[in-house]
Length: 252
Image (tube, rainbow, N blue to C red):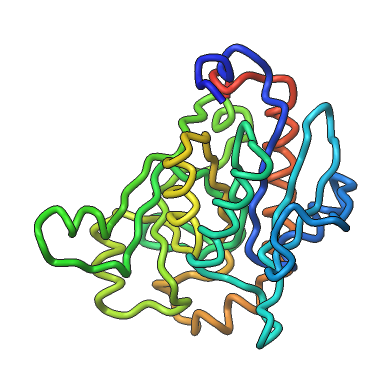
């Protein structure tokens, strides 16, 4: 899609990418989406597409599904990048929304249940200490600027750091600090990488389930808060979609 043409007409097609079923299903219900029975994806992959029309928007919500061997959510950057690539190719969206839970840093003002719009994504676990390769490893990408959306919904804004581990090693911590991140996830920067290749605008909505620099073990706090925070995430995503309806990209 030509970017100038997209700027001049209302957004008509949204691709929502969500890593976990717990996060995805409330939105499936909210937007009254139906599961695709004749998948647009190869039959070998576990990816699940829910789709429908909501307020004149064609919504495709993609969940990477359960790992075929272990039966857990297919979280992480590999599934996220593959799903994003295949979805952009098959569905040609005007806009990508990556919604999900994240760890937050109290030192940067994050609290449990806070919802952030992301200003920038970067990786914290791709350490390549060679000139220029180091920048490639960090892979910093700007999220789409949405000043009107930010003002209307009164959400917080912060930078996102992405890695393939739920916990945080000392090396990860140093990289996250260098990235100036407020929130930490396992998918965002990978999705931003693919969106940037195909020049599809992308918004990242992240709700805080655990405080990375807090007292509680990350895994314990994450599981304890997942359901409650997913409800806050779904409410925020619904508000975002309602705001987008009828607007052009430049109006966000």
